[in-house]
Image (cartoon, rainbow, N blue to C red; front, side, top):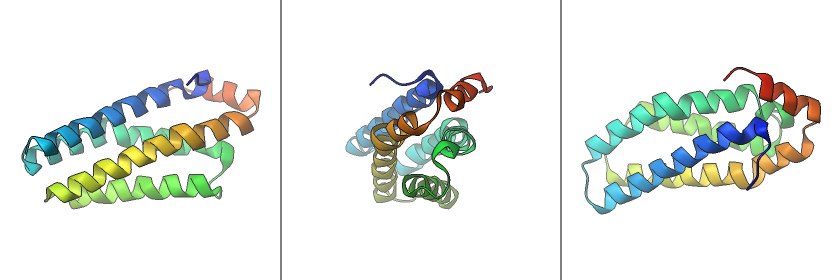
Amino acid sequence: MKRHEALVQLSRDHHFGLLLCWKLKEGLKKNISVERMSQYISLFFEHNLKPHFTEEEETIFKVLGEEHPMIKEAISQHRIFQQMIDDGFKTSEQIETFHHLLEHHIRTEERQIFPEIERIATDEQLQKLVEMPH
């Protein structure tokens, strides 16, 4: 799907998030230890997801506004992911829940939220997003 330049990097981030989901699914199939997968999730969260969530919330989500139902839901999910990280993962079921929620979250942003932002945003808003430092 062709994305506006303002959303390209965030879409690339989503690709890596989906790759994480795939790795977790494979790890569960291969009985990789929960501890090892948990450490990987925590590292990925700190270096990739957390900055990504912050950027979305401080930039593109503002186009639709925090009261928009899709944005409210996405921000709520960001908080759930943070809570899951804070609580840690002790079972393979918790890891499975995390990867399903993350995959659903990313697909919703790509298929619904980003297209809505591209539809609603003015050229000026999108250009400002392009010019912002990342």
